[in-house]
Image 1 (cartoon, helix red, strand yellow):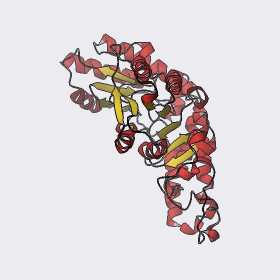
Image 2 (image 1 turned 180 degrees about the horizontal axis):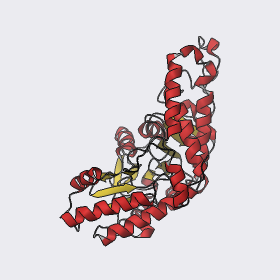
Image 3 (image 1 turned 180 degrees about the vertical axis):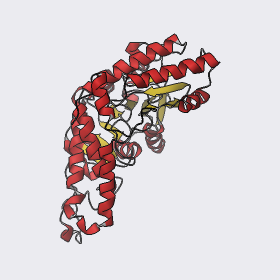
Length: 393
């Protein structure tokens, strides 16, 4: 296992784990994290085993996914029994929405412009119960913290749920989840957190945040496969009815010979919420390799990303692009505002790609996201391309 990417020399070692040419500055893990070489190898091995199904044993339906469950729990600071294996954030949050049992007139608070996976489940649940979803806008500084707190205080026990993210997916605006959780609990509301755009680059602590549910995916900052996600449920939410009534989440499922007899109970904890075919033979080996790699970086990756993001922010501001101050941006995800320039976001992203620099356009921001494999050469390449684009206009 390579050392954590805490300095440029170590980052070079980490970059060698990926198939990223030196001519490419991939600053787009918020879109999709690149699979490390060892993750690709695990995917090839899984497909080779599918070609020889006689090599797949009964334990392969349970043991690998239990290891993934443990690795996810470790990154969240939670327990393995709380982790359900799901295909997406929307599946996990829809499962939680079914347990929430909203009452007529209750509201769900969500930051404005939230990603659809952390919005549509609440819209459907609220509509079915006669409730509503309120999308809370930012304040004049661009923060969601005070507006969410004010809305919770104003509505009181009318609030059934606050759904938020560790940082906003369009530009990395951070949310103070510890304070938000405390505010939600003060009025008896639940807290749902989407960590898709943070876990793997920024630490998360279930004990500090005290969420009711946490959902995420493996294909972004966790550098794993597309189509595999996770949802952690707090203990009081682990006795509900799953969306998917498959065989593998039932008590006694490990004994294939007993599957002719219907089981009235479930496997322990949040396993009852696992999606059908949760063994995901073609994906789980990749996820396990990726989670072990990212977990080995521990907390050091966040400081590495912060240093690179600070360099990007400084350089972009000098070119006239709008950048949030350091206390209102995430260490790994940054939106570059173009309102004060004549640049078009989509045209700029295309021009950067032509220069070998890969970022995203989200809303009115060019979204730049650094991870452990990025280094100062990537930042230099980005700033050079941005300087060329601004000068050409």
